[in-house]
Amino acid sequence: MSPLLAAFFDFFSGSGEALYDVSIWTAVVFLLVIGFLGTFLPILPGTALIFAGACLFYFAMGWESSGLAWQGLVFIGLFFLLSVLLDWVSGALGAKWFGSSKWGIIGAITGGVLGLFFGIPGLIIGPIAGVFLFEMFFAKKEFKEASHSTVGSVVGGLAGILGRVILALGMIGWFVVDVFFVN
Image (spheres, rainbow, N blue to C red):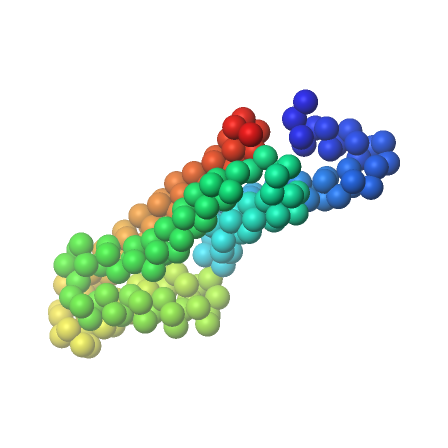
């Protein structure tokens, strides 16, 4: 019988330990699901929530009895760090790939940081506007060239989302395999 199913049956028998286990499992599943959704939605720190769910499970269930090996937790943590790095560089690399100057890359980063203060619209529009404005005013590019660099920023951002989704699936997959099948 799986640990989750056993905890579910123990919960209805009135055990305090079972209530604790079910509460932990509920919180972990919630963090994993919301974390996965956060890879699509810029307002939620997706992979950070997945990593938090894995850490919660590892430490709250007891590192020996959780079923999650410390190596698995490290692996999930490395995927989290990789996703953070991907967030920082995806838009800028996309802009560079489409011919942006160093000013366009600086504009993408600046627009992303300033966009944080304006919620979801700012997180989406900030880097795009940053590339375009920095290309126009600092790199002295024409409208068409600046627009081309801006398209690169959008393509890079979409590639970053795809990369985060893949990393999030890897994190969740590693967690499930490590907890239910390996240990």
